[in-house]
Amino acid sequence: MKQSPYFYRWIVWNASKLFIASCLKPTYRFRLTAKPPVYPKPPFVAVANHGTFFDPWLIGWYSPYPFSYMINDDGFRGRSISSWYLKSIGGIPKKKGTSDYKAMKTTFQYLKKGNPVGIFPEGQTSWDGETQPLFPGLEKIVKKVNCNLVLIKLQGNFLTKPWWAKKTRKGRILISFRHINSSQILNYSSDEIFDIYKEYITHSDIKDPQNLNYPFKGEQLAEGLERFVWMCMNCGCEDTLITENNSIICTSCGKSWIIDAHCRLFPRSENTKSFHDLKDWSDMHKIKVKEKIKANPEVLTQSKNVILQTENEQGLFSNKAVGTLTLSPNHLTFCSSSQTYSWMTENLTNCVIQKKDIFEFSYENKLFRFLFDKKSVMKWIFYTRYLKGFEEIEKRGYF
Image (cartoon, rainbow, N blue to C red):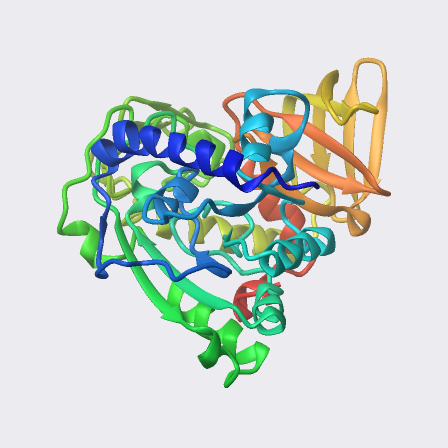
């Protein structure tokens, strides 16, 4: 992708700061834990953990230089305002959920031209406030270009706007920086550089005791959580959870819980099983999914009234059919009133969530999407990834 002229990017970049000053700063109350100046002169790579959609603006606020961010390529589709904006700031399209050689090559070219580049090596926002396994590669670019490296840790960003939430919460975000200048880069191998930034940005927002020392407030704190969790903490039933305001209710056993802005869980009645917080509940889902895969049942999971979307020649998606999505150990099947589609699970690649409610995967170089409404799209990510060995990736912390 051809990069916009520097002066044009500089104008759009500084216009973006008006949005940060008027909207993000008052809401998030983010503050720096290092003394300015924060960023060295370009070229440099800024690498950070990714807890919320607004992270690029949060780390960019302190930079006088317009960043070229590596960004999910879905935002570049069509002729939307989003596509125009991402192109105007010099965004680098990257395929979500996988390594992207073309994006890495573009990043290398931008750095060689003297540009700063911002990268979130998780490749997507955190699921449960904990840093996800990283996609390696940028350490090789940093080594090859021999540029400065800026490490950034964001604390509290997930709590201010979890990916599944409907509303933004008010809170506090701490932004910590560490510089590794180009002369220091020469002393490290690529693997050592990777280990350094992996250790620095790895973080669990829900488990961070510092976050408990600051008030986080919001409304409708539970709403949208059906996108993530789908197993009842009390009875274990699946797809029976509904949310209302700050409450989570199981329609099967009738038990309910309150969730606060720190994602802590509180049962509303005695004799109700509960986890301490959403991270613990998320871990329970992972354990149960792996147990079910090991048991090898005929059907692993199923969702009804799901919309199949297919991609046209312009790269845009349209609704194809409404039906039932079923996953077995060997096949993913979609049945509508008129047609049945089937894909071998071993050939599914790049299984990701798009736009909060869409499960997307690649199959034989074609993209397929399924749109969910008030159902867990995350369970499809868990099942398909663990079927393909994601447990080992989680253990080592990188793909």
